[in-house]
Image 1 (cartoon, rainbow, N blue to C red):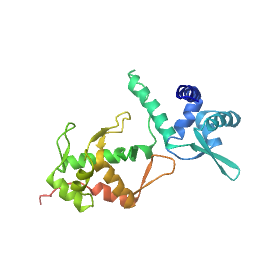
Image 2 (image 1 turned 45 degrees about the vertical axis):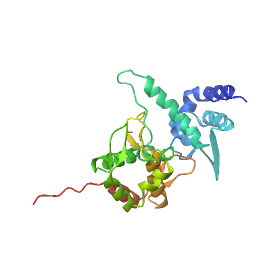
Image 3 (image 1 turned 90 degrees about the vertical axis):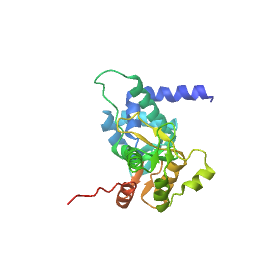
Image 4 (image 1 turned 120 degrees about the horizontal axis):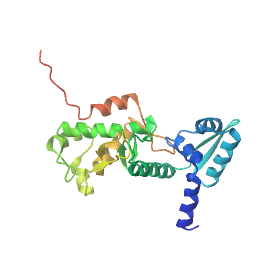
Length: 235
């Protein structure tokens, strides 16, 4: 099957509102049983099974049998990326005032992979703190790590000189503004190095088949402490 035929087939499957609603319900990577998906989309169990069978046959969903129940999840992270991309096109083109904005599940809004680096609200907050703390200088056209930033990042195990010797773009700004809760965050080798640090430290962990990142209680405290400016209280 050539690319055009493949796109046409997948687009045809996703064009059905009930099937697209099922895919959106699974966007966070959580497996859901047939009856739950039927309830979420307003279908009978038999109708839901028919739609799920079509999506599974096309390679968009993966079936997991758990006892007598059948659970479905997105077959690959790439399916989730495609669904998100289509949804973001809708948001970008629909300029009607008062239109309902699609919302990502809370788990995806908080922290998820954005390519090879951290995305989501957690990443946006981290980027903002690094700028306020003076660890990063410049703007969108030329973001650089300051001397203070080099020292502080080295203290947590991220060495800018080593990154600069291996990569051309140490830090870049990524904008994932297709979702209302997203803001600019760090990309480049620094963004990648920070994500690697968080994963290796056990502060966050990846979820199979999804870009969702699970944050541990220790991870929340540790990551939120990076770039934190201590304000002196006047007594």
